[in-house]
Each structure stands twice: as C-alpha cells, then as structure tokens.
Image (cartoon, rainbow, N blue to C red):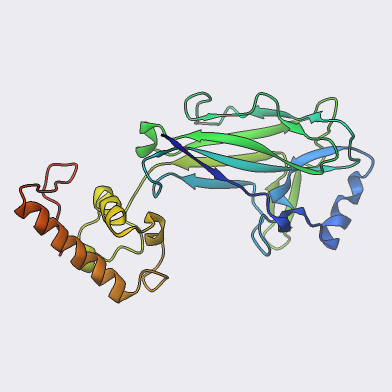
Length: 255
C-alpha cells in the first residue's frame, strides 16, 4: 500500500501576531488582503521568513509516493462568516507539471471565521525527479473576496532583502547524493541501495544521515558498528549463495 507523507506547517507559533508586524499591516486595515503568511510570520518560533522552500523525497522509504505540503495563507482584514474563495494561479516559470508532478485542490478557500488557512499541494514521486528537481510557483490574485495590495516586504533594511507576499515557490525532487553523515572510512563508497538496506536491517531512519557526524545516532562508535554489522551481513549472505549487488551490477561492500 502506498503511503502519503503530510508535511504540516501550521504551527502554534504561526498563529501569533507580533506588535511590529501589527504596525506594518495597519496600512491595509480598510481592505481584505490575502497573502502568503510565511513571508511575514515565521513557521516556527524565531525561524526565518520565507517566500520559497524545498522538499525532498530522497531519504524517504520507497513506499512513500506522495507528499502533501501545506502552504499557509493569511487574511488581513475582517473575518467572514462564510467560506471565501482564493484565486491562486500557476506561474509560467514553473517547471513542475500539474497532474504529473503535483496537484492542487479544486477550490482553494479561506474557511469561515478563519484568519489563517492553507493550500494543500500534493507532490508525486515520479521517476524523473531522481534526475532533476522541479519547481512550482504560485501567484495570489485579486478576486471578489480579496485584494493583493500587500505585495512585498523588506525584511533587511541594510541589504534591502525583500519577501514576496503574493508569490510562493516550492521546489521538490528525489535526488540523493552522499549525505554529510556518511563517513566513507567506516561505510565505504556511498550508494542509495547501501543506505536503504542498512537502514532496513538496523531499523534506522535514512534522514538521520543528513546530519553531521556526532549527532544523535551518528557517534563514531555507532557508525563503526553500522559498518561492521553490514560487513558481516554481506559476508553471511555471500556464504549462503546470496551475494548482494549494487544497482550497477557490482558487489556491495563495506570496509
């Protein structure tokens, strides 16, 4: 059975206003504006402001063929007692293809009495994502319910770095390269097949290797044990007539 991984970014910290941001948006109090919330309110406490992000399938089990990413929207203005439709279009610069790489809800709405809601983007783990990342760019546009007067926000007066409040870029793929927590001296040349086999046998999370050596589960002693275990496992399999091969046909080895 295929699994679906849901990435939720609607966190408690996401719901709070700061006094600074309250002052910034008072200019638009007489209109009902819609904007991508993460450009003004961080997704996690003390986190960065973003108008783009990336998602990877690379460290996920092969059973996971979909991910759902929730892009937060926020209304500046009056709350409504009825659901309100949001006009969201796909920018021509997008390289992700709708229906192949992703799908969007048929209707994107801000539900009644909601100040914050989300766009659920379903991403599909297609074979071509192992060769290239793709990007989905979404634009918010005005309609009968909302204006888009809040277009940009300068977040650094020194560098003039600006966040886009009406455009959000989501890049995703399935490219897997040697992670930072893979010491060649203990584990040998990196391959995806080697990583996932080791994780299956030792009940490890593949994503843990995307950390520096010394992180939880990646002490020198632990990594040395992983390599020794796999070396014994491969030797036992070979002795029983079941030599394990890499996808390129070479025999799998550990130092």
